[in-house]
Amino acid sequence: MRKISAIIAIFIIIITCAIFIFQKLQKISGAPPYGEAENEIPDLNPYTWIKDWKRPEGPAKVALQVGHWNSKDVPDELQNLRDNTGSSGGGKWEWEVNLAIAQETKKFLEEKGIQVEILPATVPPSYWADVFLAIHADGSTDKSKSGYKIASPWRDYTQKSDELVTYLENSYERNVGFTQDPNITRNMRGYYAFSWWKYEHSIHPMTTAAIIETGFLTNYKDQKILINSPEIPAKAIADGTMEFLKSENLVQ
Image (cartoon, rainbow, N blue to C red):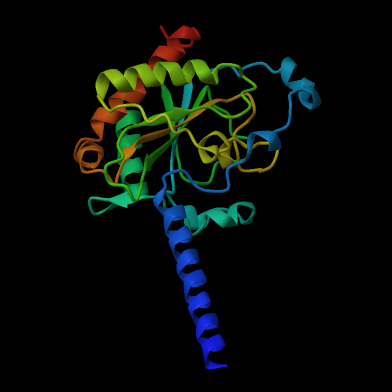
């Protein structure tokens, strides 16, 4: 009997440790969990009304969403995100690094006459902009992992997000010098802010969007730039965004 009890106790300890490790791994990654799988995304056919959509008049508008910033204040429909703090490293929480980069990016873009809005984790209902960028920093238990990655939504109804990603990738490669991490995740492409068919607090389907993992906060080389020189990744993001806006004839 004692032997059975001991086996049960060991089994419970193993399960508890496994759950703890799983939760720890979930929190260390940059992009929030619960991203949509590709087969969960609706096709275009039910939304033919989008074809008649026209861009609102006005200057070019860019939204910079700061990943995990004020995540405790997200609405009930996003309550699973309230305890997700993202990655950390170098004595900084991810949201602090994301915010610093977003603020520097805003400065660069406003100098070019672009209307810029910085958003927290909660996106206003049906939010529209010419460009929506979710800014994050990655994390891993493997501290040797380094590099950036940028992704577009699974379903891009503007048919322009892949082009935006290309401009951003080229600019990031030039300006920052980080290698590209090819491991684009479901949580990036199925990012909650892209899921307008599921959440009220998400972008309008005709918003060209991308999510960028600016580097690994858990890697010393990456965090040195992300934390100490946020203007470097910010300029890369701003330059890539400007190139996209020029290609759309939204700026000179």
